[in-house]
Length: 209
Picture 1 (cartoon, rainbow, N blue to C red):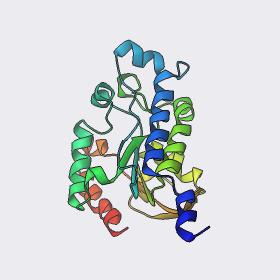
Picture 2 (cartoon, one colour):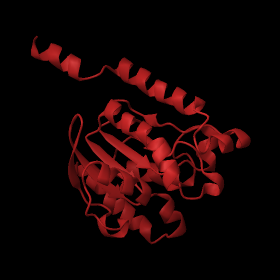
Picture 3 (cartoon, rainbow, N blue to C red):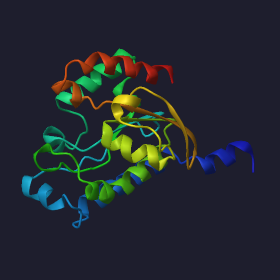
């Protein structure tokens, strides 16, 4: 088998990736035992699976959808999303070239923090999304995605997000080496404007990568 043929076997096609991601959407939509399924149905919400390039080199992983996201099915489309767009623009990285998702795919009641059992219930879909898209860089947005993804990839001694935001952690995924970058969640700047300048500075690391 030639080199190009081997690569074709190893690297899933864009069509295959799209089908695999569509399968995840169908599973989340129809799994009635999910801890937030009943609340989704009651509120007329949509699950928020993810959005962006299926060939993305950078994946951004948040925590859980908010009100606007649950009504539209799109991640980061409210006020936090507007700041995220500004952050991406500041490093000349078009939003459509990254892939954006959350650990928890349904909105928790009242926009509360996701519970540990909710993270456990939804996390396997995030794991699959990572292996389908195969990003070289995963930026965690907020402490919940940081606390899940860093240990998942073998990084255990990292402290609080206030200590590690903007740092790089080299790790190994199933498909090869990756870099993990913990970042503040954009919503944090809505409540603490002093963090905004820090976020713009931290995002420069993505440009360098």
